[in-house]
Length: 83
View 1: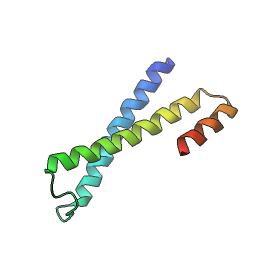
View 2: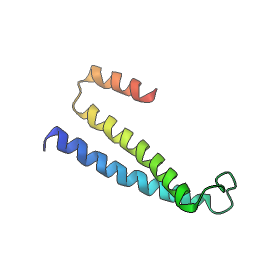
View 3: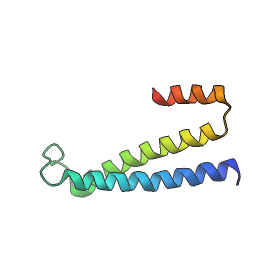
View 4: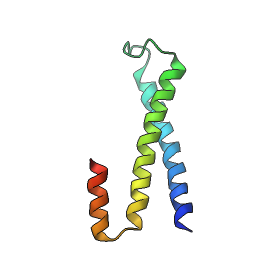
């Protein structure tokens, strides 16, 4: 499997996982959350799904980059990702 295919596969998997996490988070908010009451249910769901997708994709890309890096570069990548 080439590097590009691996990164793309991991990114797609992270996107799906992020969307699922966003949906679960949205379901836990319930109708009692007044901070988001000015938007529609769909908008709230979409915002949370985007947040989960961005976070999951970022982590997946980071992990894929670590696989192909040497030990010194891994430390640099980890520090960069933590910031």
